[in-house]
Amino acid sequence: MNKKQKWFWVALVAVFLAAPNAMFMKVAVNGLDPFLVNVARFSLVAFACTPFLVKAFPRLKGAALQAVLAASAAMTVAAFAFIFALKYSTASYVSVLLLLQPIMLVWYSVRLNKERVSRRALAGITLAAAGATLIVLLPLALTQNEQFVFYPVATILCLLNCLLQPLAVIKIKQANEKGGVPLLAITAVMSYIITAANAVFWLAKGAPIPAHVDGAVVGAIVYGAIINTLIARTLLVKGFEVIGSASISALTYFEMLLSVLLPVAFLHEKISLPMALGGVLILLGVYVVQHHKSDHHKHYHLYRLG
Image (cartoon, rainbow, N blue to C red; front, top):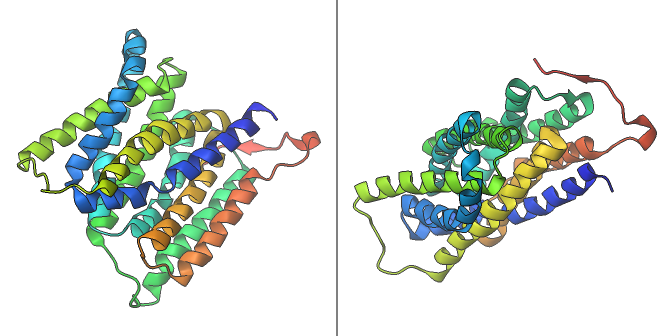
């Protein structure tokens, strides 16, 4: 097993770890103010990553520092958009719209990192994108049946997240590869900035704390901090560096599909036939991207998008 194959399987494990995040964060925002949820989960991440930041601090200068700060700014807004989208809609609705994230990751990778994408990989992403389109647009075309609800504020927030979170990933990659800043040190800086920004807004709201905090809410925050942000997202960024944006995007589609299904199973949210059909196309896209030819035919034509 070569390095790329190894990291594909590592990234797949990370996908399974990250998939329940929207569901757990929905539980958290049902019990706490969204700003406080972000303060709690990102302060945990910042605390856990501080030793890596202290060790890597001398490397935070010049272009590397600029990339880390750009990533932090993008991720701060993306985290705000994600948590409030969950507040104003459902976990499955948010997960469906976040299917646009992988497309943006590939676009940023080609435009900003000059990454090359194979025709077969592009075909897989296109097929997955067709599944995403089917999921989102067909229910609207069917004149909004009883099970489909449109959330305008959450939709705008999800689109904002889809624009900014992949951009943050690109900047993280640049700081890590070109600046030599460890991923966990970058995560620490981002987490401190996100925590500080959300703390300011939370205090400005009067620092609301409910009289009783359910254990499920605490567990959801710990999951979001340690399992999702600290472990799964770090592994996925590293996987992005090794196996490229096309394969990571396909895996991310698989993650998003699971993110749609899990709230249906555990939070009793609704799923429609178009969602199921779109999910099938997404899985086919994952297959197309990852189905390699034999070792004697590994060199195929590459081209730049756009």
